[in-house]
Length: 217
Image (cartoon, rainbow, N blue to C red; front, top):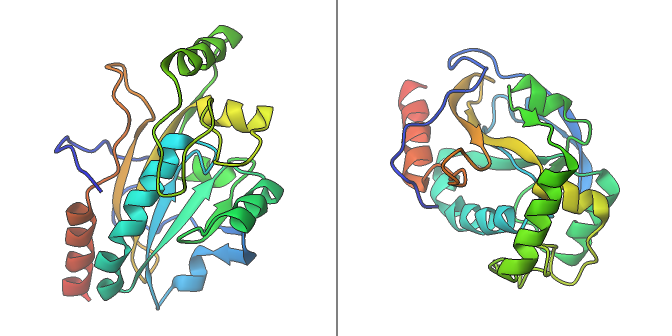
């Protein structure tokens, strides 16, 4: 994962306070809850647009490469996206997802962590669609070459999936320790006013948080 060295905006959840709990359906099995890991694992929560977004698939590839660096600290990654369970199960059927893919279809869990979404007129989405068509296919990831509008390789992109991929919403990453306490947060607009996309925190940044958790235990 590549860090940019920029200051990380804070979330609405204060560091050092209990992280909001949840239980969500997963793409490849039973529902998963944050309390399932209490007393056993540190949890890295990644709120993303999901597998339907080509740039999110790139970030998923980076996170998959970072997993060996997290494992010595008893840390797991949970992806949380506003993907309907049926669509998430389709992803799991066709692709090897590297960590649990949780479905927050109504956005309640996102909201509890202070992750925002902005509504825009129809013209906003049309402009982004024409921009993708004009600029060609988005870059590929470990999962293969994206469709012309950024859809998952080999899968027909639904209208709802395209709208979600183009949505003007925040994304973020949190680290929750084994007691359920929030220890790190990084939240920001998917694309800021300068046109820069939100960057995943670097592997070193997350490992430093996990090391501090281990020292404090």
